[in-house]
Image 1: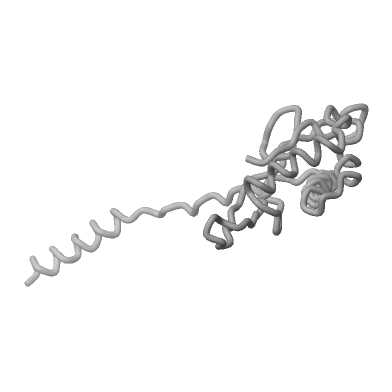
Image 2: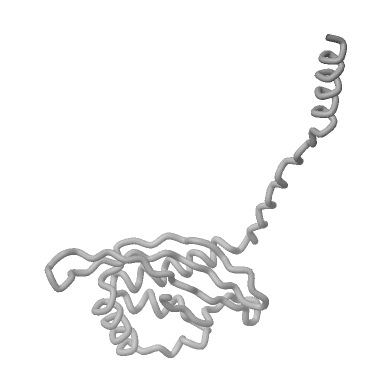
Length: 148
């Protein structure tokens, strides 16, 4: 009987000694959002809204001072028609994130499109919209943009 009690006592000690404390997972640090991010997001929101509503004037205002500032109304219409025929109309869009890149700001949105399929059924699809911003003489400018 003493041997059985001694066996269970030693077994209990052995099991307790084998226990290990698993450290908690470190909480990922939330990246700091620069103070000017909301202004940058507004640029992208205005660009997407201008494409959605066929508003060249608002579209061109977003491009002022950047390399695409000379985009013509005809260029805008041609691009928009291509988007409409390939993907449909933009139904909604939402800001997603900013990619960490040197020298420029890469902001991403999800844009939901809807179009009629060959059988008359509505087809809904989502694309990413990327906006690349830079700074020139202390001002934010649009360097490039497009659907991915």
